Amino acid sequence: NAGVMQNPRHLVRRRGQEARLRCSPMKGHSHVYWYRQLPEEGLKFMVYLQKENIIDESGMPKERFSAEFPKEGPSILRIQQVVRGDSAAYFCASSPRADSYTGELFFGEGSRLTVL
Amino acid sequence: GQQVMQIPQYQHVQEGEDFTTYCNSSTTLSNIQWYKQRPGGHPVFLIQLVKSGEVKKQKRLTFQFGEAKKNSSLHITATQTTDVGTYFCAGNYGGATNKLIFGTGTLLAVQP
Image (cartoon, rainbow over all chains, first blue to last red; front, side, top):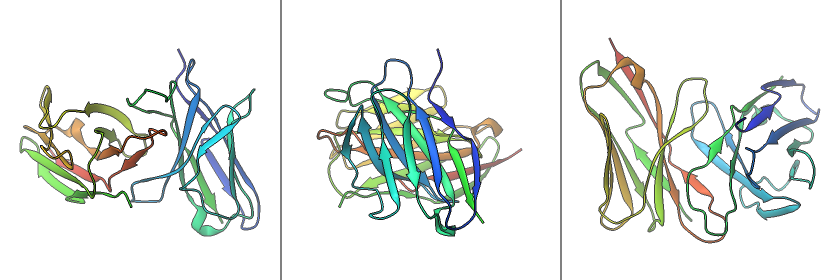
């Protein structure tokens, strides 16, 4: 029973390049959350998606960041033209249907992005 | 906006001493959850508190939810080196999205 799978675990990019982070939720989960954790800091909510829908993107920077969760395949967090300040750990979490669910989130092991 | 603060930011204890971290929300919570993150690891769920004044125990860990549902605490009795990590509270404010707003975290260091 695989948990939340994230890849790559580590990613190094030069300034100006693009970073793509992927997340496959737990089996049976249809909702995905992305959080960003800067070094020595807490987790900041970025975006909440269900299949083919962005439900809440209130934490997403207005530029360069986008997220999707297609009908088939993993959720993808995309960062265009990366800058040094984007260096962080990006965690994906999943949950079952959110309509009446207020329980725990299941986190992946994270993707650690380093921008040179 | 919704904000969750935690204190202290860092705590260093001798093994066997007790430890407490406090969490405070700017507005009333629907529920509160606690997570532990080991160094280099990912957040792992510990517990959820839903009711006003609720107290839950897990072995040496005691979790409390305030009467006004705006604050919470985690107390560890007789810390062990395996307790090392960052403890986060995470507030759920209800609504459609079920997103959690994480506190700033308390890093616990335990000296053997």
